View 1: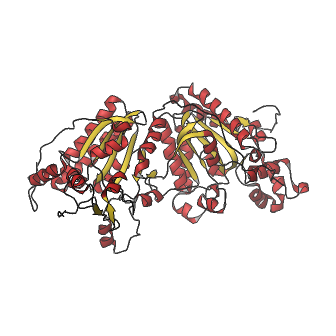
View 2 (view 1 turned 90 degrees about the vertical axis):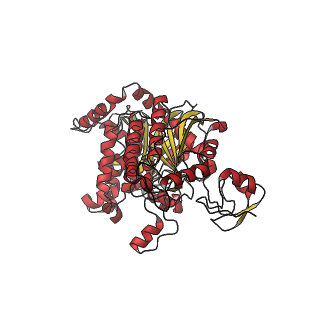
View 3 (view 1 turned 180 degrees about the vertical axis):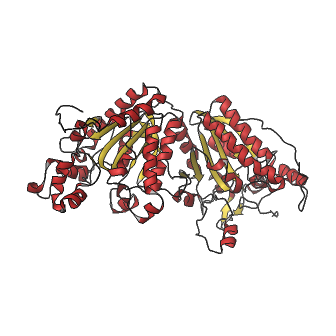
Length: 585
């Protein structure tokens, strides 16, 4: 049996093709779990260990075969640079290291690029090769990335890069360091061209690669289990003299900390990327029929006033808005949106499940959709924090607002929150600034923006994602500066006056339409949205679609000023409350 040397793939090998031929019918040892694996099973499983699920590296050709439709792609030539401008020597000359890497891999440097289709969308894909000097980024890689981006811009098609690198190439010293700025400048050109930029973070991605172009994508997709970071784990442990968590710098860890949108298994990557590209490139899709059933537990009228004698029509609306069986954000997504791709993280600190958002087709319209999710049972309510977002949630919303603007996609927000999360952690991380920035961004984006109050619209936590060109409201939703219970406690000094407070606050859809705060009331089923999800979604879907179509007729550049003017004029003429009974529907 031959002797093999250890490689970054975690399996002992000289090179891929030779190894494939020699070990086709033999057992190999996985460095991830130290188990013996039948090589045929390993290869058929897309080079993922079937026992521990560790994903090992793929060559550029294997990546292209995996990602492009029907394994059909065209490689194109990338620029070449001189080999050793610094005449660098460590244990061996840099020129010898390059020769060895070229002989080993059969490619000129650690970057390859090709054109093809992903989900029917023509795209350019560049792949970093971790087998070529650990995928390190020198001048050749920098020039290759820049040339690939310029190629995509010339063809007006999306650009996707698969990263797998140990960082900047030490043998080129500061010349390698400059590639961080050069590749970032190329990403700026791609952004100016308003073309999709998707980063697929593979194992490993470190150093100057993560600190430049790899963390500037419109969407970050991390391959499950991939190691991603700035400094290596051992370096951090030695410098900080502390033991790091077992999953530190893994794809899942970065997801929890807001750095990546999606963690996907290797087999799911083509479909995931295809869904994103289809929406961003506005490929047409049929709306299809709305098919959603009301859960059996929701088919009853579960609303009850505690004491009818102490209630008011306004407070009855408060209770209906809080009805636990009303449809929530994810229910509306399931009923109204196709090809849904949730996006996560604020790219700064964390992921907030209370604020949901992503890309999809809303009744056939490609759109960015955001909103608060309350959760349905104890576990999901705790996970989503009862729909009360932290600063990370609002910063994620801002990021998705900008994404909608870049690709001129309508922004739809579904508002359902008792308010922003009030807690020590929120204050420490800038809750007020995050809410303010969401309001500011919503007012400034140059794309159609429709907001719908679907349940509770509580205080600044609600208006943060409700500064739309059109603000709609379900018939039994509420919208207020504070909860009526809190208002009663503060002003009446008695919580029992909550129904009286609700009536005084004018917080129902009809009352808010009459004072000009909302633009349209969406009718609910007779006994409330919680009794008939199908009808509720049909009404909401039709109302939002109508508004988007009207707004799409207006030049996008004009929308921010029109939106601001709308809010400037709001409340100016409300001297005396005068109800109107037949408007708004």
